[in-house]
Amino acid sequence: MTSTAQTPAAAPSVRSLRHWAIALGQTLVSTALGLLLFLISFGMLLEEFSDDPPSGLIAMYSVDAPVGLIATLVIGPLRFVPPGRWHSLVHLLVAGVSGLSIWGLPATAIALYRLGLRRRLVLDVAAVVLVSVVSLVSLLLDSRIRGDETDPLLLTSMGTMVVVTMVPLLIGHVMGTRRELLESLRERAASADRERETAQRERVAAEGEAAALVRERDAEGARVRAEERSALARDMHDSISHHLATIAMHAGAMTYREDLPAEELRRSAGTVRDAAQQANRELRTVLMTLRTTDGDAPLATAPTLADIVGRCREEGQEVELTWDGIAPEDLEEHDRSTVVTLARILTEVTTNAAKHAPGERLEVTLSHSDEHVSLTARNPVPPSPAASITSTGHGLLGVQERARLLGGDAEYGARGDVFEVTAWMPW
Image (cartoon, rainbow, N blue to C red; front, side):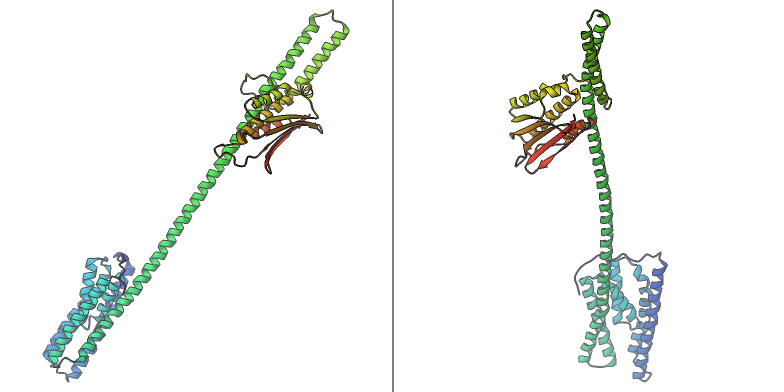
């Protein structure tokens, strides 16, 4: 017998017809079976004494019948008593009846079974001791009335009674263990279901957060692109204003100077034409963007590129600018939007290198080939980049957006131990 103390299942509901049917069945079966055992035992008594048994034995059977009848009648409804002190007390009392009443043996077996379901060593020991003591007293009284001397048969009967008592207790233990195991499995299954539902909710929440992060990243990228469009619009606004001022000045000169020589007139008309064409090209670029803010920085020119490199060197950054197949004069004579974009890109790549590869050499090459002008920047990837530097990648995204606005594109990324940024635009 185990000594594990477990909280038993709650008592059956008194409102359940099914449980009342079970209780009624237990009462009827135990009453009928007890009556059968009583009649068999009483018939054997009459046969033993030739229908004239001692009055003491008749008195014992007179007590046996009502006690056993009461025990069998109440054993069914007792299943509704909640597990606890009263439950243990009334079932111990019914179990003790087996020593006094043959009729009550079926009720005693049911009571012992219910005590076994509790799986408590104290109750098991109490039941065995109570049944053994009551049975011993009954056997001694029966032996005295019969006039028999105490013999080893009495001890054998006592041992048999103890064994018979332990059988329903052990069955109750087995069923109680099985019931607890099933309950544990049901709880584990319910817990697994709850954990699965929780995991499902967490997965849905994580997917929602991931989608929110993607939307936030897309919105941030759109903001950066919008800022680049705005910056390009601001730069082109200044450039177009310059060309329009040139057109107005030369057109005004041709309006009020009627004495201009033909050669001078043709030269002024050519200047107006060139300025108008340049303004028209840059106007197409600025119409692709939205001007949102005003800036005070002057419009970039070819010397601006050298100024950017010189400023970086003054700040301690090692930067080398190489011209390949193109000269500053070529940029001065070309579309102003191209040099402005190159200046913006050069500023970004120098800032990016200073932030992520401090102390490393940055090599920048401006080249012209196949109807394209390109800017390539290379710097070694540091062996242990600073973990405290937080990068959003928006600067390089702006480089790509600015190049695309002019009909080009940009690529960037690590190639081995070198980080490379390449941007190209039509020439």
